[in-house]
Length: 138
View 1 (cartoon, rainbow, N blue to C red):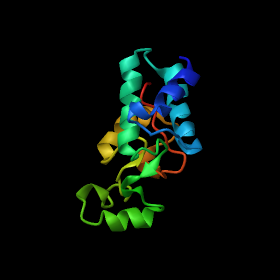
View 2: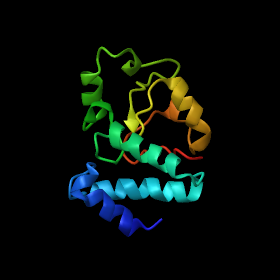
View 3: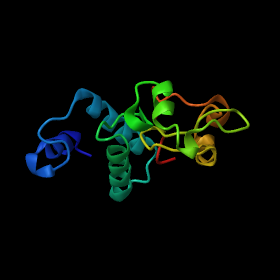
View 4: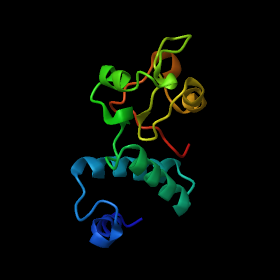
């Protein structure tokens, strides 16, 4: 993929994606997705488009891992989600499984499904949105 051409296309006013500028944080998030796709992807353009579109939507165009509600910390996210059933502490580990990362996975069973792709048990140890970026392609 010609990344220079890709970013030039994203910056075109007519693209309707980011306007005419992309922040360095957005570039880092996009680069992470492109790098993961290059090493773990299936090579299909539509899979990459799906991954980029999902991150775009779920992170409110930020393209970097975030907590659900875009909260700066877990306490704020929990307060904002106090009535959401999936954001309440769940047994057996007592973690709140509200969305984090670029794909905003919720519920322990969804996190368990991606467990084999992580180097730690994210259901048992919980998550931090800092640096958490789920690989779409493995």
